[in-house]
Image (cartoon, rainbow, N blue to C red; front, side, top):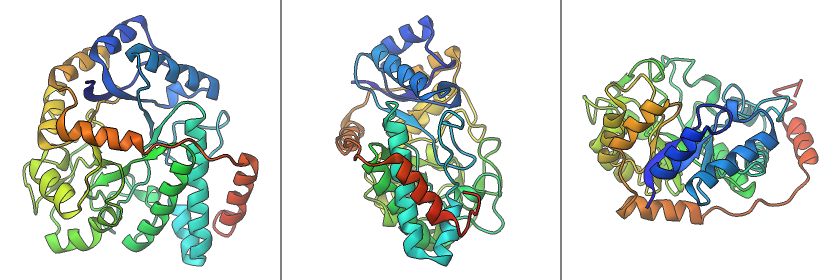
Length: 340
């Protein structure tokens, strides 16, 4: 069985050293970033060489939310709106907003799958709170009300799957109260259990049938005062698997983020021991990759079952007119984005 870890390449294409490493390490899958996406042809070629390195049709992930979180960028790829734009449209015309969100998901799915990418890490289900850090969430959130987030996110997931890519709901069990950016520091949330359940957990519970999800590097003091969700067996077991009812494949958020401390092998082993299924090791150099593998385990048991279920749900992209799709999306969004 492959190792329960996801890696990426340091440069736009694989080095000989990386090819040899991936052959021996056999990670479950890979993730791509902007440096791999200079063009559709380059991205497709890179996806091919990643799969060749491990000798199988390995899953390949991307973070392509739209707005400021986009790896596939113009002019090589079309720009997509930030999720908040769909929430703004929902306030004017809910039906149009749901159509637009599904259409945007389909276009993102087609964009990814055409180049060999099979998983897009959307939608973000975090519910932003007034005093939260505006940079970590901001316009990445669909809306401020859980019910609206659920409706728009469900449409986006349906569209993405129709476009040939699998969605990943994030950041479980909710990043919307974080007072700092987990890329640079560890957020700690002191909200009451009742508030977390009624607001933060609600979108994830409503979409608990998703096949893939991602954790948050956030401490939830009501459940575990010492460890962030990614490293907390209590949060993973009692909240994500228990209260929320999520039984899909659970990725960690990027383990290189500064919210987490300690050596890379410890971050990998602790996250897997806490109940995460796959460790996400982004932008590691070769020495860090070697460290990470010392903490990785082979996929087995429930984690292996969940990977099989998630990949079995991947379907070929539905055909459609891309040019017409982008024109329709621009028309739908015109009331909230006149220049779209």
